[in-house]
Length: 223
Image (cartoon, rainbow, N blue to C red; front, top):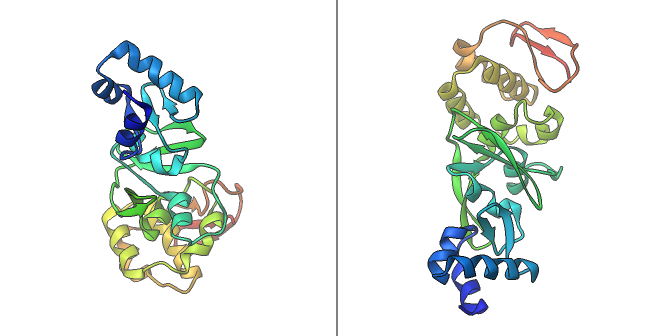
């Protein structure tokens, strides 16, 4: 197979496997040598054992490494231009076990039971799943310090966030989001109070181990 034919075929997908290459080249031994040569020439990038790409873009390939999954957290908020701090890692949500991979930069996969709140977005000529702003903020809680995502909170869609919190029904998430939204004059207390317990927890799980108690939300304000 000519290199140009190979590239033309696999440029249509962000990630391909050794098995995919074998089906095209039709010779397992030669396909390994062919891929090794292409990697050495910088025309193919090895993601991890058995997985390759023609694109040196971890944001693009991340959700094709572990499926099903979607880009979320600060990566999604950066994509939507809601925060100015550029993340050093790509954050993804998955139904599979949490893990980390490295391709150009760290790709972090966080497992969730709340697999929703994402859309298929156009990115570099491909369709990839990316969380909307509200779910990206929820998925960020406890994963990055709150100050990193704070500038996005004022632009939350109130009704959408209420629907997400009512679906999740986890007190710790409801309390933290409710307080943060209230801080930006978005009041959702009456709509979500049924999901709140009043065992005190820290507002920011990654913050200081001391702070002022907020009785209304059952939080220790440590930011």
